Length: 210
Image (cartoon, rainbow, N blue to C red; front, side, top):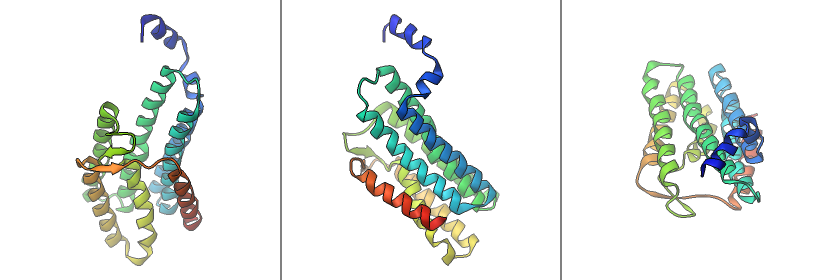
């Protein structure tokens, strides 16, 4: 970007970038994550799960919208990438960490796990921002949104266990997924028609949890 382009970008207000349709979708996902944190703190875990999975859906949606928009400038793409990454650390780092802490009744034993979840998200997103995908359809390590998708399914079985036992199970599963988030293994990037599968999954779990 030359000096003239940089000066022009500075003259564009921040709210103007935020009004970009993909970024509006990203912010809708952030709202879902904030609601999930709110309900997790209140101890309403089904609604917390609903917020998390809708955050995943909006996270997928912003990328689809961005790729289909024509005439979107480099500045808008760069802003959208930064916004998406910052929101991801809330949706897939802080949000699950607060969920774990709250479900563990804020016992200090759950603090290391909460830190690992947030640190893993920060490390993974920093790596991705620099190196990106291995190719068009392959990630290095397990994508963070998969953690939420798996957690939402596992939590369906919470009624079969008492809370202390299930909290340890959730703890172990989240730590296991954190290992795979950072592991040097290739995992597929789901896209295309997979968004319809995700939509059905999110709608189905929303109905079940409500």
